Length: 145
Image (cartoon, rainbow, N blue to C red; front, side):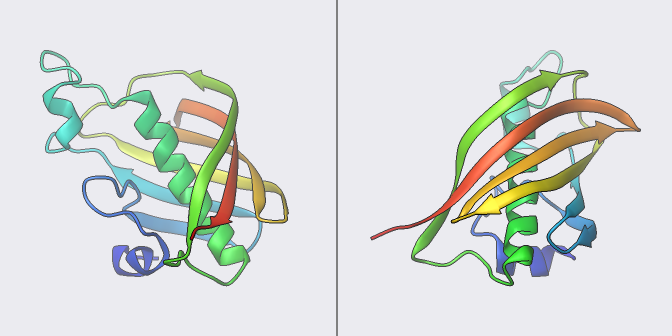
């Protein structure tokens, strides 16, 4: 799935869209996606000017966006104007290595279960085959007024 297809599925836009390409997807089971990390990312100006490091919360956000793509694919849907895909929880978050400009962050997410618009995922992000972060994510799709 290229960036143009991703833009039809997710409501996120620059500078908050953190998935550049979907490399693999197995409907209702797993997704493997890519985030190219460049020195031009706006967060690097302040995190940290002397040693740029991708904030951990943004690595988790990238995983959640990949998880959303997996969830929408499983339901044969996309984000809509009357719903929002929220974080509902994170467990077992572990940061294993820093992510720096020039890295390719490979986002791997597996759907553990889904029921009534609530999704549980196992996720991890890798750089050069090394785990940078791993977490169990819970997300929910909710209607908005």
